[in-house]
Image 1 (cartoon, rainbow, N blue to C red):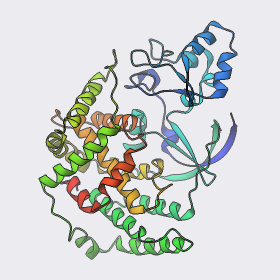
Image 2 (spheres, rainbow, N blue to C red; image 1 turned 30 degrees about the horizontal axis):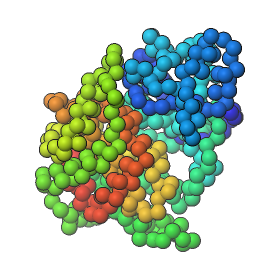
Image 3 (tube, rainbow, N blue to C red; image 1 turned 180 degrees about the horizontal axis):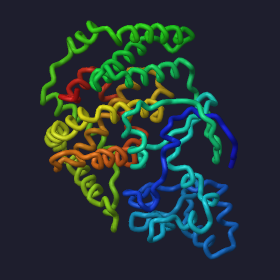
Image 4 (cartoon, rainbow, N blue to C red; image 1 turned 60 degrees about the horizontal axis):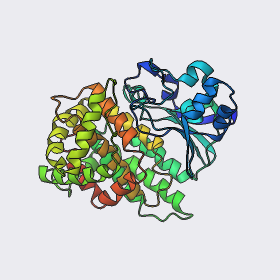
Length: 402
């Protein structure tokens, strides 16, 4: 374990976030099927505790072949060390220093890109969704001193050209003269232009040239008058076809609990998720998804454009989709496919509602990130399905979203 002062690229949401612990509507120690891995240093610390509590902690941990140690399968949908009043037994009786790395840091995430540290919050936490997305202010990014209390992440390559591309995408998505639809299409054209260049020694110059051109288009009225020309007209059949393809990809990644957890506030969401999975598997999703998307998602996005601007601006950084991109059009197809999958997942989750509330949208976003978006193959599968004719697919999928 390394504890030291570092400078990290981050956002103000990091400092505004506070864990609600036992008051959380979906406590991350409860109502979940994920495994909590225990780092070797914490495991050794638990083994050396010659106390009844120390022995109990060790009994709650099992060895996973080739992966290390993890807390045993959750009992009745919650961690075996969670107390009846919703508190962690380790944290309550021993303090934060005795928590394993995962429990100590979640929902905080660190990345090292070319040895530059970045610090984010995971959207799989409902309070993170509210803190990060539900503000009228644009998300700002800056470097700030932080205290890192975990093993430094392994550095990943991230050259300056990709950093410039990411920064420019953030500027595009936060340009409020654009509607959500215009932003997504404009960024798609931008990424398609970049994909025409080879990733060689001249790529940096090519990136700057494309950025200069697209920045000049931002206030060009003629450009936007022609933006949709030549694309397919929006029609319900195309929208259904898109949703059917998208739900088929999502179904591969969708995980549902083996049984509905008992005694939790949001058991209805898990019941709905189980139904959604069955509907998708039975290939009837395109019928009701089209109707619920247009009835619920379209008006909500149009009335709360700032929430989805923040979602996209935040995801451009936290999703890390540019790190390993070899074809920028393909990478963007996966990124936008995941955004649309989140909206459609939420539409399916609340398909029986008359309207969509803020609580519903928060639930759709965090459950999508908790249950689906972490699947390693999701973005790859989305990209392979939708790269060809992406902008036409996108136009049809968005329908009446402005």
